[in-house]
Amino acid sequence: MSWEGGKWQIPDWRQSKIDGIKDLEWTQKALAEKGLKDPWLRNETWRYKGYTGMGRGAIKTVTRGMPIALVAMAITIAADKFLGLGPAKHDEGHH
Image (cartoon, rainbow, N blue to C red):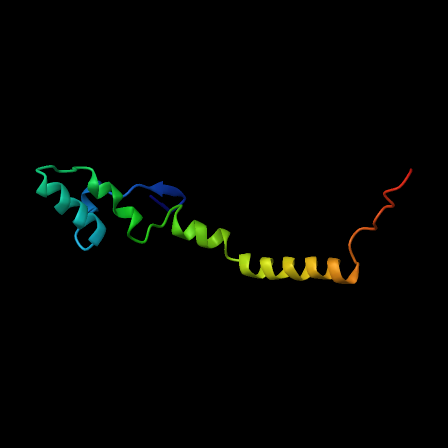
């Protein structure tokens, strides 16, 4: 599926080919050696091709700023610990 022109477009199933996708070709060959066939194998091609919906692109978008955020968090924690900039510590004695 892909988002085009303000609506979802579902690709035609006849356009999905496993030719050139080594993992799927291997699966097809292994099944054929046992006399089996998976007619739905072509439905897995989106996992190996540049899928334009929720997939690798979504993961990349979600994790885009993660390295900078991790460095900023480490600096903040270090500053709190070593410079005493964190919240004031309360006396654990009697209130």
